[in-house]
Image 1 (tube, rainbow, N blue to C red):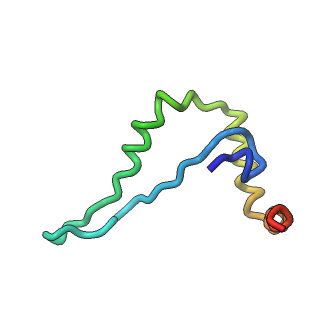
Image 2: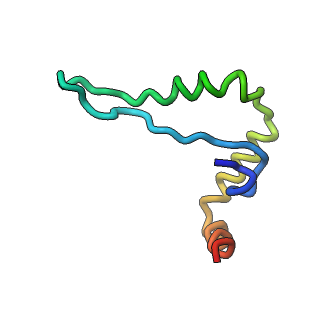
Length: 80
């Protein structure tokens, strides 16, 4: 998801993926999701540059604001 469009934050993006147990195989062994390594290899270093502290701080503020009732009201206004 883009952070500057959906969160009113700094220009950037976030990738969400599953971690943990996906299921079990025929022998009863746990099968884990393997998205993390695939995403990291695909994104860094080719598509992602180094982190900028001001962008990380801005994203932290935007994520905190997204948990407030005021932000929910804002999103409802956007959708209506």
